[in-house]
Image 1: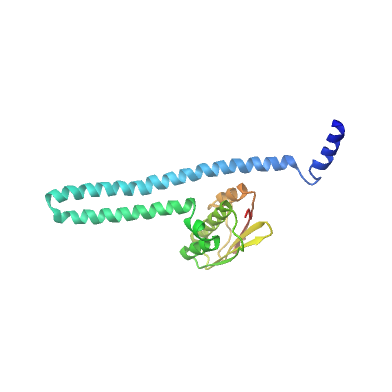
Image 2: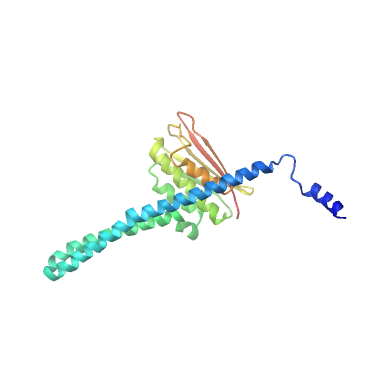
Length: 231
């Protein structure tokens, strides 16, 4: 009876002939390692941003407030300038802190939708950018965060390196996948080994997604990403 049960199990539960389990295991091992590396790099980036930016601003605020307190005892009229500088430094620290928070998980994704978040990225991009989004149902939060990161990184690269006059971002739901495409009319020749594209690939593959880049010399550059929708 045990052998008979095992016979049925081997035939009904074994993978199809087109499935290479060893290759799949190797892919998952590689993507897991890439995720851990990307996570460590992201933590280092956040630490540098807080240490080199926000922390220094707050130290300056503390120093200026101390100078203002001492000035109040000697000459109250001169304390106003120190207080104004301290206020300016505090505002800059707050702006930098908000910038760091947005790179971790944009609040707009929690409050509104991925389309709204991408529209905000397009509005801040120096290169004129059009958003074409058709998402009748919201995707999983981690998928939306990854899509946001991909577009943010891609638009940054376009503004810095492409020389493009315009860019188009389209995002669609295709069955159980989210397809994201970023196209620009720049000079092309984008190198996948740099300009943040390695980070995009790692983050996409961590979600069992696909990443392709077509950037012939002279352009256009087409970045194509698919992710499991996970609604």
